[in-house]
Length: 187
Length: 251
Image (cartoon, rainbow over all chains, first blue to last red; front, top):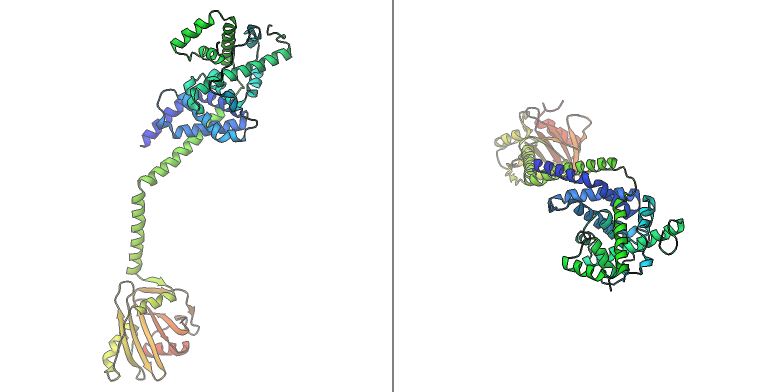
């Protein structure tokens, strides 16, 4: 039993150490506070360690991020500032593609630097932000995001679409304000 | 009409092959949808490259490891207690039982209010007034011990009793004179009575009261057993009773 636990600890640490920066990064993007992010990451690690014998062995990172997200939703979200705007992401609400001229040139994204992206990302309403972070930064599948956030996969799909649209709009506004992009969507 | 979320799902490779083919077919003559897809892919690519705020996770990782070590320690203790709970309880029970047995088997300290328990279990037998008192002297000797020298003529033995319960063994003799009764009790399993105050004329004696009745205690010299004399008399009178039946007792 003692050796079993020691082996389990080593196996857990081996996997956890690799994805720990991702865990902390996600926690920081969720909480937007370094102190709370550290607490969240630490608590998630403890929860994960205690539940490690129930891990199915498939995707440790997805499993860890699911714990982080669930913990954040259950514990930290209540004291977060600002509304989550969850009602905007009705499953199945269709959003038609805009006119070609309205779509910003892909060069816009190439010119964005980390701080600008991070600032814009922080302004995206929470439910959409979580979906975008898990999908585009942590590269989880829709199913894994649905598991992590406890919502149907259709909701994940619409949240990602809506989140990216909001993010793009924010980046566009910033680019126009800074003169990176002129009105009309071309550089 | 092409829904935006379909394009996002396509960019995320989350469509089935049929859905993907269908969407690509519908997009083939829709320049806006194609531009939108390209824009989504560019943004995805940007976010993937995006490294986020710089974090030093090494120190936090070390703290996590320390926390896990603490958890392991707690679990080890809990595991041990959980696994051997019955054994530990059994050991405690055994220790309590052994302590009780030892306490009963060997001399022990009692409080004055416990002394009543020693006497309560006895049923003294009354001695007829016309009984031969010399034949009763062994009973008195058993109570007073080797120090017993004689039974003063003024005292009559009017009752004797014995309690043989382990831990509560005692002998009892009731003496009577013209002023009334006094009881002399030897408690064979008791080595000390706590909470007595010292009888000043003789430091070998301790005194207390039971329901307003005076009692004097002393220790037998030969075996250290505790004896007691109790009656409706002053302490000095009780002391003189002891002196009269065992004059060698005392300092």
